[in-house]
Amino acid sequence: MPRIVGNEITLRDFEEGDIEAVLEASTDDAITSVTTVPPVADPRLAEEWIARQHRRAASGTGYSFAIQAGDECVGQIGLWLRDIDQGRATIGYWIRPSHRRRGHAFDALQTLCVWAWETAELHRLQLHVDPSNEASWRMAERAGFAREGLLHSWQKIGSARRDMLVYGLIRPS
Image (cartoon, rainbow, N blue to C red; front, side, top):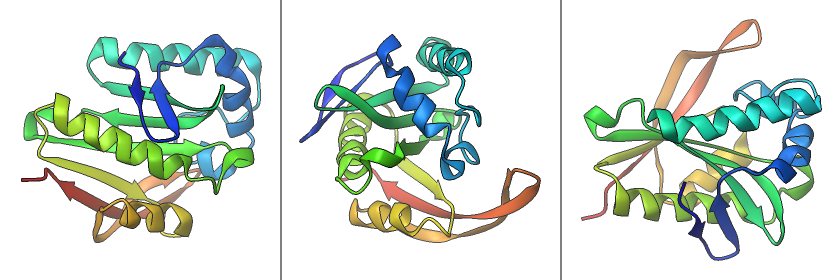
């Protein structure tokens, strides 16, 4: 896994000490309902989640980075390569509740995009954002992603189908 330095954050592989970040994320339904973070704050489940993140790059499915600010993990950002054969990748991210509104997600998103354009045969990056998550879609727009539409019944969250906003960013010329 590469180590990528942004303005105020570093994107790096998950470490054993990041369990606290995953445990905190496990308490936030906004994270657990749209990610694979366990919905229960259980140290064993957090360790298993971190182990799965390590396997993603090795299996070619993508890159899952811990977002480090200062000396601690404040969240996660991933570049998912399911559609790499079509020249596109999907980005997902979360910030633990106690570290929000500090610019970490914005810095991580910009840093990951610059790295993705330099290291992969990508022509498009995309995000899927819950329409009710205004902070997330505003941040995506600030980072240069264009809102392209609303995907009706796109994702199952809990027991219900949910709509998602789709955002795209095209490789700079």
